[in-house]
Image (tube, rainbow, N blue to C red; front, side, top):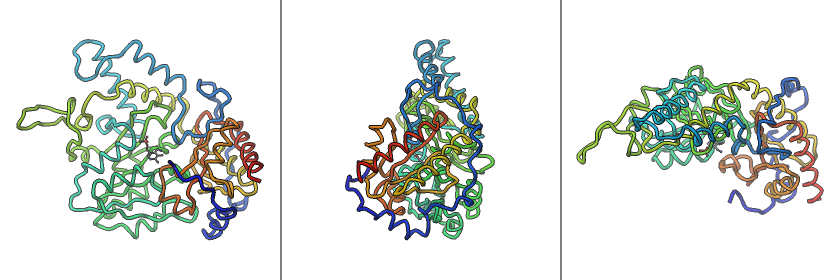
Amino acid sequence: MDATNTPPPQGEVAARSADRGGLFHTPSAELRSPAPPRGELLSVRDQFPALGDWHYLDSAATAQKPQAVIDAITNAYAHDYATVHRGVYERSASMTDAYERARAASSKLIGGEPGELVFTRGATEAINLVARVLPKEGRNRVLLSQLEHHSNIVPWQLAGYEVDVVPLTPDGQIDLDAAEQMLTEEHRIVGFAHVSNVLGSILDAKRAADIAHSKGALLLLDGCQAVPRLNVNIVTFDADFYAFSAHKLYGPTGIGCLWGRAELLDQMPPWQGGGAMIEKVTFEDSTYLDPPARFEAGTPHIVGAVGLHAAVNWVENVGIDAIHAHERALIAETRDALRSISGVTVYGPDESAGIVSFNVDGVHPHDTATILDDAGVAVRAGHHCAQPLMRWLGVEATARASFAAQSDSSDIAALVEGIEQVKRVFA
Ligand code: PMP
């Protein structure tokens, strides 16, 4: 369960908003940056066969798939399929080649080298991997932020780290001034979401890296929501680890990526044992391959990698900057539209990436989402795997509309009409 179904008492949300020093207030028009011109909007909706006239506003949970990705997956199973790394026959060799090309493309997308990218089941597994096997070097603390997804909190707890939490600025961004003050030489690593999955807040990744490195700590960026929306370059950011999932990037579920600096991956022991990660095995002892193979025990998600590669190609063809500008325009339009409806509270900073959370005063977001569903609009409602952030917002849950390349103004119009319906039902 995401949250209880008890609606917050009427007016409670608005009352809390006042306590937050303006977090939920509508800034005056002149403070808001102008939306990009509408001419920059993309037109790729017809490439998404599952959409039809459905208003899918849950891309932050998982992205819908363009036909090119579906075709790549289908073709891989229908024509090219074989195991990787082990077969001597031709089709296994070409599948291995496809798998390794997918690795190279996924790493290059974020500015990395092929040997620095480990395939995992997703961002969650990527973060667990680092938490589990990164040598602590006598430092047992991790610095996280108040807005982290549970998958960037719980792995550190399971690995025995002491967790320190950086607060947020009033508009919902990680407070890097506070991070600078809080960081000590006991911190092994700083783990921040590059983009918040609830508020869309965008981290200044380079500054976060500079802060981490100033005390000899490492920086892990949870890039799950950033890779589909922003131009990511781990070299420019000077990050040490970067985690993301294919399924939020228009690719398949079950595969994701951990990019890590080569010298760090080299120092990390294996975390799972099995086939494909060993050099030599005896009953007394075994030796292991170099990264990335060292961290990929067992038969991998072969066709997942092919699908991810197709998704990377698709994003590169459309252009990540074009996707960013498109989402930025839609977010500005959505924020303006939601703020013009009385009794709707909008969360997060104006300059946010593709994601906006809101509540209708006095209505539980599950009820909001259910009524929106009746109107053909899919939004997520709940704590979004970010319970500490919900506590900071002073709510149990929010409704969240999240956008992607195929979203358009018709989705926003349907959202607004659906919210008016929510208000009529609860009037
Ligand atoms: N971090 C963030 C910011 C996310 O939004 C998500 C997915 N909601 C995750 C991590 C976990 O991703 P996955 O479930 O694909 O491993």
